[in-house]
Image (cartoon, rainbow over all chains, first blue to last red; front, side, top):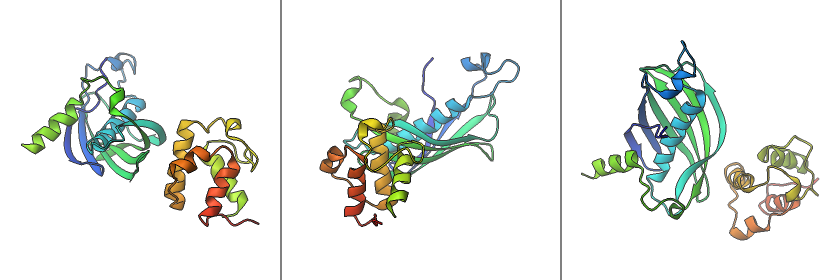
Length: 148
Length: 80
């Protein structure tokens, strides 16, 4: 299973805010277990979607501190089921952005409703720690498209 | 903020039960005072008290009394 939980970025202000999207495909592997006859996206995956979106917002600043890594789920709530065929819109606003840490207020929207919310806390890992060919395709492709 | 309130806040930062932390408590006695705990403390001091720690401050924090000293130096702690 790949762990890319953001399909595309819709809008981005580096270090400030992001709106991204993830289509919930009916053939997602976890629906086989979560749950037979009642497939819903696990809350931990909704949280990870928000975390990846907010992380891209921070990474887009390309600061020497490195890549944003989720360090703490300060709070999270899941208000409605997210089902196969839904499109999750991932909103994140960076509320603190310092040298060593950042915090983000995030939400998942499906249709007109907010289905999940989270406050997330990030630390940073120097980019040299990652494989030399590591590339965040979703973020890099979006930024390249903006530069054209 | 008085010392009691400061200790309560420090316990919250390290996710320890209130009353578990005293002025004398050392870093190694607090389970939550690891690298993430330190980061949470840095963030808490910044966001709640507008205190920005230097590298020397961060390296020097080895016991709860060191955190109280930082609060005191920055005018955020009123000793009883």
